[in-house]
Structure formats: C-alpha cells, structure tokens
Image 1 (spheres, protein in one colour):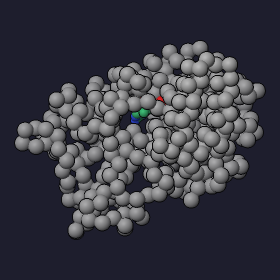
Image 2 (cartoon, protein in one colour):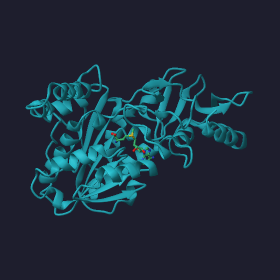
Image 3 (cartoon, protein in one colour):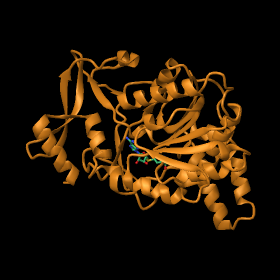
Image 4 (tube, protein in one colour):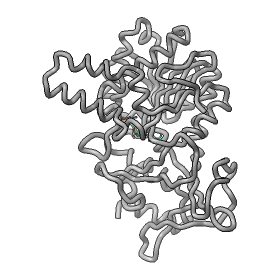
Length: 363
Ligand SMILES: C[S@@+](CC[C@H](N)C(=O)[O-])C[C@H]1O[C@@H](n2cnc3c(N)ncnc32)[C@H](O)[C@@H]1O
C-alpha cells in the first residue's frame, strides 16, 4: 500500500467516501505524496512521454504560433507568455528559441509558468536558465498580472479533477472512492441530487452511463477567456479528449507507459481524464472570446509546417539523427499515434483573424 493510500484510508474513515475529484486532487497534488509533487514522471525512464519530449518541433511550432498571434495583435510592447503545467520546461525552451526569429517578440515577452510541483519547478529553472526572457512562477493562473497574454497548455487540463455521476433508474448517484472490509480502496456510489448545472448531454445518458464534470477546468477556462476578453490575447489548449460532449467514463491511470488500475497505487501513477473540448469551447464563447477548433494535433501541426521543419532538420544530419526526426514526426502526427487522439483548440480575442493551424471557427 502506498503512503498516500494509507492517508486516503484514514481520511475516508474520518470523513466518508471521497468524490473522484477529491481522489484526483490527493493523488496528483497532495503536498507530500502527490504524484507530481516530488519526482519527474516524464520521459522514457518515467511513466509517459509528452509531445515536447518527443521532438523539439512541437515547441518550436507553438512558439512561432505565439509570435504570429503577437504580430496579429499589433505587436504590443508587453506580452505575457503563460504556460500551464510546463513539465520539464522543454516546450517553453523550444518555443522561446523559435521566437528569436521574429523581430521584437522576445523583447516584448515575459514568461509566466503555472506549476504546482516544486520538483518540476526546479527542473524548469534548469531548462530555462539560459533563456534571455524574464521568467516568473505562480501556483495559480489568477496570480498572473493583468495585460495582453498568450496562454499555452499541453496535457494540463487532463490533470484537473473531475467528478463522475452515474445515471440510475431514479436519478443520479455520484461515483466515489470508499474502503472495503480489508481497508483497500474500492469504488462506491452515493445516491444524491443531480449535478448542477446538469450538462445538456446528460439527457442522452442511459441507466449505468457516467457523465463527467470538471469544475476546476470550467472555472479556469472562464478565467482565461475573461483575461483574453479584458486584455487581449489568445490561448492554445492541446490535450487528449473528445470533440463533442457525451456520456462516458474517461478516468485513467498510467504508470510505466501502461494503463494502470486507477485505485491501485495513488501517488505512484498519473491519474487523468479526457478533456471535453465542446464544453471548453462553449465556456470560452460565453465569456466573450472567439473559439477555433478543435482540430486534431496531426492536422494542426501539419498545417503549421511540421513536415517542412522535419526536412530542414534532416538536411545534413546523420542517418541516426534523421531517423530520430522522422520517428518524432510520425509519433506527433500519425493517426495511429498522437495525431488523432490529441486535439487542439484556440481561444482568441474576437477581432483577430482565424489563427494559424485552424480551418474554421469551432462548432
Ligand atoms: C502531464 S504534465 C505535462 C507537462 C508539459 N506540459 C509537457 O507537455 O511536457 C502536467 C504538468 O502539470 C502540472 N500540474 C498538474 N496539476 C497541476 C495543478 N493543479 N496546478 C498546477 N500545475 C499542475 C504538473 O506538475 C506538470 O508540470
């Protein structure tokens, strides 16, 4: 039993079953035993590999996307580049390096990183120490000072807690984490009132179906859209998820590059859920911003020119390096790899043209 599982068992004995959201919060960000709080789970030796760790091309193209948005905004003299959940800092390092090619962009930019993990913040300091831009760390998005901003989030929203509700014969019950007679973590359901507000797609749920609601994700989307509406700017969200809201259980755990039992090793496995991009877009639109996408990661990166960048990186490279570039390209855009599962959605101030990488406004 992990140290966190013991803590959770004590908490459940004292307070009763935990919601899935409380379980995720503890599993990921408990100050002593949370998954992200002490170690570095990324990379081949860790539990999973994210797109910026696959290839420098991912961060470079996102950096150029940001620089282009900045010029579309009229090149304001101060622009905050905000990254949510920067991991090892690899995406930001590649993005800033690519941004040096756009005159004036880095002189105008200050980087703001939103990070809960002291261990990863330390790692980010190492990765970003040689960059010639100011870098600030904050625990929450609302700590970023006002002003025009460009927000980037890759595989961040999936880590924000969700609650799960199960359709029953008579209404709804909430899926919770409880203890069995031996003190092991098990799933349970608590009958209760319908979640409020009840999302429209709940009407399509059959008995036994699960719907997922992420209050922190929805709140953050509204805050970011409000900041963009108020100060100008854009946001780019990349994550695994679905384009249309629908019932379904998407809670998952990953450990050692494999799916893992969600309740088996709290604190030692990543626990996430799929992002509901339709809900995200609706919140941003209601907050007064324009929404583009979602498009697949493969379509987005291809439209930004990832194949030409791969050709450029391969020119003059050794056969081994070329093989790595092409393997990274395939991993990022192939439908059988990350190309289709991952989606990209942009939020922009309403007077900006359709952002690069998108063919139309969403929904
Ligand atoms: C899956 S990693 C993604 C890392 C990076 N974006 C990448 O693509 O490599 C999730 C990141 O979000 C951070 N994180 C998770 N939950 C958070 C929270 N509630 N507040 C702030 N950061 C959080 C983690 O510490 C980590 O840096």
